[in-house]
Image (cartoon, rainbow, N blue to C red; front, top):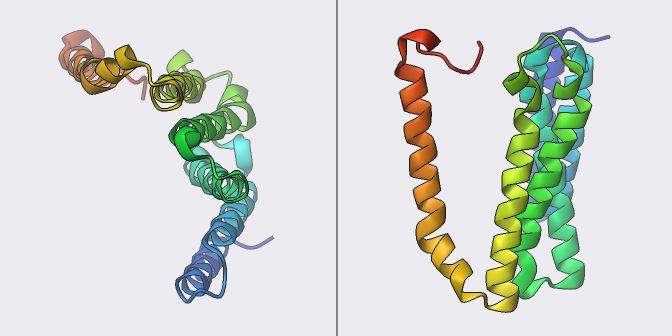
Length: 178
């Protein structure tokens, strides 16, 4: 088994080569993403996989690269058109479900938030995908208002709640459990 530094070095070299091949038009961008995601997944496994919580930092881009590549292939075959945006966000949600089931769910000693954040992220992306699908696919006018005003307002209020809980003396400035 290669050392962690050698594994990371090999992954960087492969990633650079894939980017160069894609930029030169020799390799399709979706294939470059898929191969890059597979390489990162190999690095994730070599570094101990789910055994170490911090390895989630390798799994997230690996899953997202593969998911974006799969979306690119699907869009190329089916020409998604109006439902392309909704499908893209649904695919991103699938990527976070993969992170949840492959990695974070196994860390039973972690806090509730540390174990389940990918499921929360995936659920929010799925809701957003459905909202976009209703607006783009069916012309739902109320959904346009929600996207224009409601969604940004929800983000601002969520940010304010994080700041408020992060500044409270009880949290010690860190409400994420780390």
